[in-house]
Amino acid sequence: MQVRTADSIADRRRFVDFVYEVYGGNACFRDTQVHAPRAFLFGKDCFARACRVRPLQVVDDGRSVQEVLCL
Image (tube, rainbow, N blue to C red; front, side):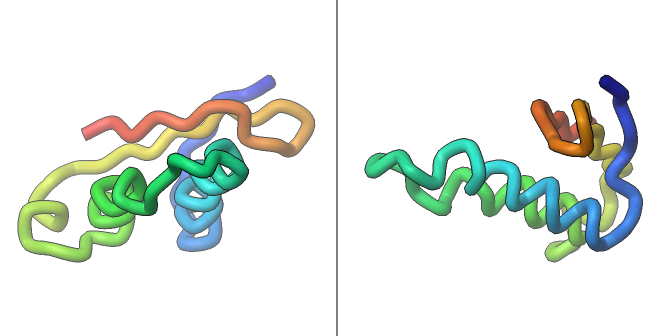
């Protein structure tokens, strides 16, 4: 198990996809849970661009098991 930062665009996309992986089968899941992390990860608005963002992934056997967005 290792902790790594999601520095590349591909890593950041996987960071967002993780939410769908965990909650995708849940009938109550709504995409609104992904909007804020996506805005910070990709600097989609002026507030997000002004923040220092450090996305962390806990990876076990090549698969994300936990993700944290540090602002």
